[in-house]
Image (cartoon, rainbow, N blue to C red; front, side, top):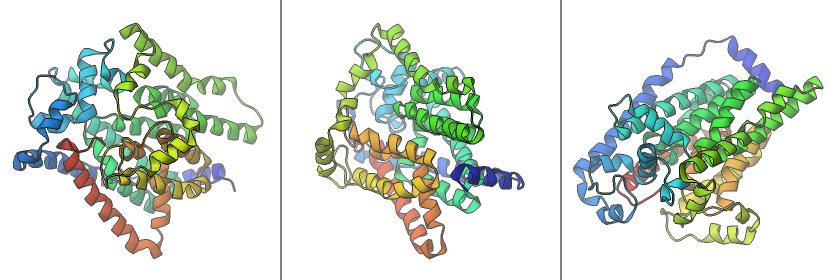
Length: 394
């Protein structure tokens, strides 16, 4: 029985049971309240650790805003998204390097919050990630069982990079769209999958890679049925069509369709597809470790990369669609530039958490399972405190 048949069988078995999503809602809401409250308490009780000098050296919005409690919730790239939501793309602006879908969502949401873009961003980020996590759990529950669903969701929430689900970053939106895409793909609802895969690249560049598992699933469908519908091939073009939309937005906003790509030069972690084949440069970048936890030279960023590589074989055996998504979304980005923000980027590679849960759910790993979760949660709190005080970009 191949992985497609296994998935169909698992879905049929799951449909005989009743999924109780409400049992997950309260724990996730409590976790989110805890994180947001921790930001407030840290800033109020330990104001002296806020790196004011670094705050003034880096981009913040509005530019004349002094450090405040709001600064602890905006954080780094969050300022760029808030700028774009208010001002849009402007010729020569550093913020042009960021994708448009999340700022558009913030702007639309601001009409519900009396024009307050920060409140809009915080509410939407937490709402999108809450729905995304529920869909993730539902997806894993359907195809891998309840135990793996519970553990994989716990691992994902505990992972240090998951702290960005609470801030004005695009990770929440990306998780939500990714889970909609994969649920639709597994159900062979290619119209919904196409819609999700169209919006994914507008949220983050790795969304373009959805075309690969999309193609693989259509290929499997062709092997099973002996034919491919024309509309399925049209749906497959959705991620590519999304990139044309991106260039159109840039052209209409700035007069230059490549404005976003050119703005990458302003960022230390600038990426280039031409670097993908420069293996010696990648090896040097991987080996260039200067801090236990930092920006470009972080040992932790390299550690998460190694963890993903270790689990790739398990991911391959679990599902080829998972594998290609994990390779393209988790391995390609650091090979096109640096390990800048890798801790954050890896949170989008959901197959890693499923593979890890399938291993750790075995009884012989019970002790390691809880030790791992405890370590991850502890690191998340440390990373959170460093992040909101301007010591770590993410």
